[in-house]
Length: 435
Image 1: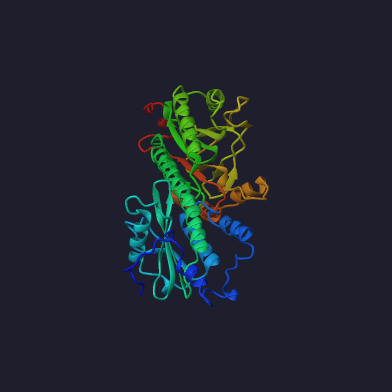
Image 2: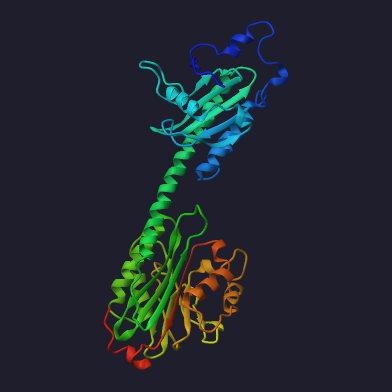
């Protein structure tokens, strides 16, 4: 195994191979020259460009080890964690048998990262090992360490140029790993905010059953501004809301929260849906940094068996009859919120007990390169079993439309009015509590 008795600081005089070159016949032959020897700047530029192509830390580590092997041959790996916590290799390229024990490599990296008092810090530490040459380079950016690059090669000793270039690769990877860490933290913050907001929708009246789902797009994409809301109104009515703020990430989630707050405030005055949109648009257009948003309002009145719709650039809702047939409800479409253009209108349709209203964001149906009318027709072609629960309805829609592989976030709300026990259908309104 690798020896640990003797450490050789790489910047304290010539490396062993440089001394060997001065001996007759010493050093590697022409056939062993690395691929970059004849055109190093161009090749090095290409190798560096291949590190950090994504904001995924695991991908960056793999790209680093591949670049190290391409540059100097042998095998390369990156430890997980810092030199103080490393317990395994997170990425390996080449023959893993050439690499030292990960704990040994971590100890080497600690010595390279924390030099003796008065000594200049080295970006790497060479270890001569009985089976060939090796190097440990901490992945350092600022005052943070994001792992250790460990490289080894059988045969000849380490060239100074190789050590410097490997350290440069480690430096480049560390910078990208820092960005990936920041990206992950922002993504987690946005996700926590989104989940907190979605976890606390308003409560509808007992005469209306509600089910809501939210599916963020992809595994690494930041959470966006899709949202659903329910607001209790007078006389047993409930206002249903589905909205979509432009873009993704923390900024969209914050703007979504602002739209949601203004909606709750305006809806408390019990205005018609189109007037609610008008006031929301006035508020949003007065804030220069607020992102535009689409929004659909549906005021459900189970006592009268009707729903009143208004849209700010949003797709129409679907209506599922008691027999399971699906159709789209027409709704006048105004401009998105935040434009300041106004011009919203309302439309009223019948909504009987047992019928299901489904409102959704565009991520559910839109597909790249496909006309929106065809996308909506796919939804309208769905059929359901009579008596399906709202959860079953949503499961069917999300499954049939392959929403888990959608190209955008998906928020979907299903609502079904019913007759309250102890009174006729019209009795659910006048005596209901005001929310």
